[in-house]
Amino acid sequence: MPVSLSSALEQFLDALRCPTCRSRLHPDRGALRCPAGHTFDIARHGYLSLLTGARAISGDDAAMACARHRFLSTGKYLPIRQAVTRLVADAAQGTVLDVGCGTGYYLAGVLEQRPDARGLGLDASVRALRSAARAHERAAAATWDVFRPFPLADGVVDVVLDVFAPRNPSEFHRVLRPNGKLVVVRPTGRHLAELRSHVSAMVTIDPAKEQRLRRVLHPHFEAVATEQVEYRASLTRQEALDLVGMTPSARHLSRAEIDTDGRLPDCVAVSVLATAYRRR
Ligand SMILES: C[S@@+](CC[C@H](N)C(=O)[O-])C[C@H]1O[C@@H](n2cnc3c(N)ncnc32)[C@H](O)[C@@H]1O
Ligand SMILES: [Zn+2]
Image (tube, rainbow, N blue to C red; front, side):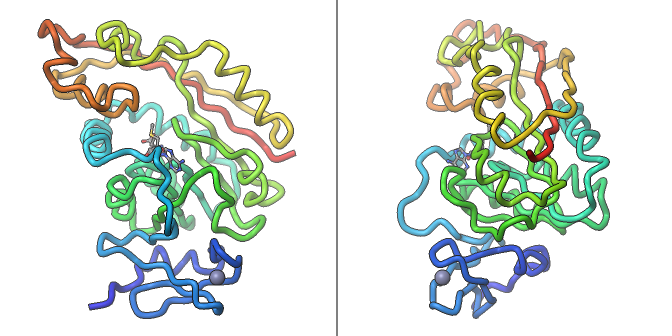
């Protein structure tokens, strides 16, 4: 039986473009199709499969997506989500794009605060998108590789979110309206420090990262506000294991390799920067 189009996806049809020929897409028997016949299936789990052919290799696998979903459900990153919603509070109501959306936790938070907004999460991980497609009734989700031109028309987005995810500044700029806003969240060197020192496979955060971010965003964006979100979070053993399991560098470790001496930290520093940018 063909999968029906969710209302969240339907709300996004005017903004979506065929990734192959840039034409508009129309619903057709459980898929979206452009006039040239390029066809993109809607998965049983509700997300749109725009990434056909070669898969991006960097998306989260099933175990990582589950660990992320479980950890975020605890609310331990709620202060980060609240900082993101504060930073977009004065942006125009409308269209929110979450790039590298994972399970859709941050997108859902923004949509909750903005009753008139619609959202789209893009991610290379089909397992993460299963959750993202259900994260909020106004959140659509689609497979995409951040490093390719986005399957969206020019200037149709009011807010781009990029939370701990890969970035494509020129595409962020192209899809945003002239007065649109970009919000980028990234860890500082203190983020999860106790866990990083315990699990050697968790890479340390490169101190040059901030400079690099400034350099790549500068041609397209100007920072308007930054919030530093810093607190200590208590951790159960499962939460500590999930935080490690969400981390690409440590994703293949077994429980025994992560918790060699049975002494995973029961408290950890959360330390991130969230910056809002306007388009140049
Ligand atoms: C650290 S997670 C952050 C997820 C989400 N923003 C959050 O904070 O919960 C990074 C996300 O980027 C996705 N990702 C990695 N490389 C990607 C790519 N090239 N294109 C699209 N998504 C990608 C992963 O699948 C993962 O969901
Ligand atoms: Zn097409």
